[in-house]
Image: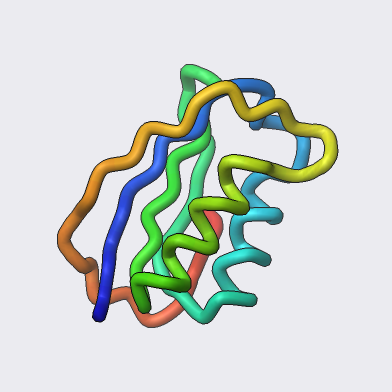
Length: 89
């Protein structure tokens, strides 16, 4: 089953390689979408693909890369965007 979710990640998530970490997790899981930094210091990601793969990416986002501190992850179930790859915006 295809799943799509938008994530808003708060904490020390900018300047620590979080977008690259997210892209690597997405590529590893075979999902599509995008990730980018927000002006307020959060990271936003849209992930779509197999529901189990999206769950695994979410678990990775809740952990983050070594230099990050993830305080909160807000999740919104979303409609699929029809992306063909995963990109850093």
